[in-house]
Image 1: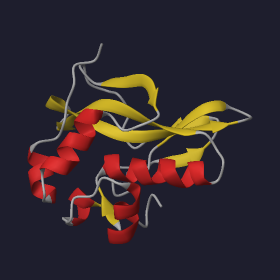
Image 2 (image 1 turned 90 degrees about the vertical axis):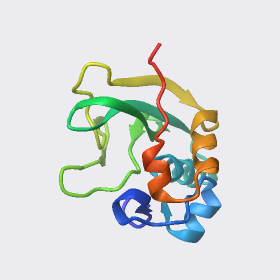
Image 3 (image 1 turned 135 degrees about the horizontal axis):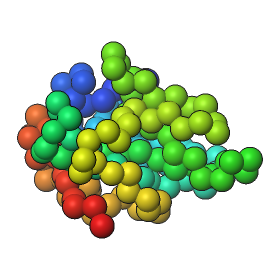
Length: 149
């Protein structure tokens, strides 16, 4: 799923998707939508899964910031383990290798943060963004952000 569903920004693909079924139907989504699909697929197999978020810089390791969507899956041998469905490309190497976590983006800049919550449903701010903007570039110009607690 990580590499077969194309990241909307990387591939400059429309439509903007939010629901897991739409991501699967259109084969594209931003990290948020891809995390919605991954949670649905994992849950459909009877495994607990949730949504997680990071606050990251958009580029060049300096503000502005945006929220990045990923997942947590409950593994009996390890407990909650975060995975990143974003999709790999040069400079981005997410992998599933428990117990070591290998997310797409490490926290490296002041103001970035791993948000500790595991959400059962998507953050309303994320859903609003994906439902408000109809093109990948409009979403990219309006990426959601929150101040970490």
